[in-house]
Length: 327
Ligand code: SF4
Image (cartoon, rainbow, N blue to C red; front, side, top):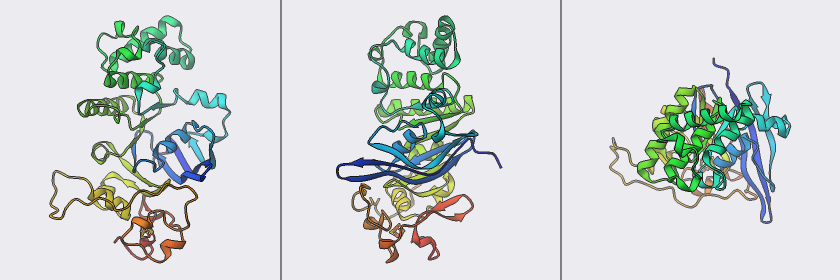
């Protein structure tokens, strides 16, 4: 059994809002093997991005990590000082955000921005950092990197900016890359190129990748394992084949029924999940999905389902599992 490079246990990140306590992430656990691609899926507001930000301890007040453990190799990330954490961020764990324009500083050239990280983390001299930055830009497909090094973010298209961000994220050859909806802000044709680049980079570095997405097509083509989130909780977790071929949680089944597949044999209509996602502010007891669930039982009103193992590493949080099966 391969030792996980990252282990998240019982992570809870809450935000104290005027309306009440937003339980953005409420008890997430998963592990990541050294070269594994984990896709975290779910609707907007399900806690995917907050999970990623929590791993890097990028949660600002009124948000707080209130419980749990995040272990990277032999380090408990929640116990590190801010200075120690800064060395992990960008060096051992690289992050690629949704919107490259807001992630890049508009007043510095992209060369300066990549070089700065290299000098800080790898202690390179100015010229060494510049050469390495140019190589990185070339490796992510930026044409004429020597000239583009001196350009500012607004001189780049959206897709090229995302390539720059990927170059910055891999500058120190991190063990883990976290990409939060990296193609959301891009045109469809560019999305495929960026995802291919991400997959190539992950293989080249032999790193682990946590990819946050709501696109099940992307999940099918890239994931080894899948974590499905709903209202801040993990509803299902397993290898990609199991999640696609034998989903157990009513929410995962609903997600699968709402996408078109090329091999579609279904004669019934595509179905969307009825109702709207629960915003987990002071969430009521019981299952967060019950107002949208056609299979709800009496117990779902009062008791929160805990993850239970269906088959090896396949975990499902649903009372139906105790009753002997899926709906
Ligand atoms: Fe539906 Fe109950 Fe399962 Fe929740 S626990 S998904 S309400 S059956």
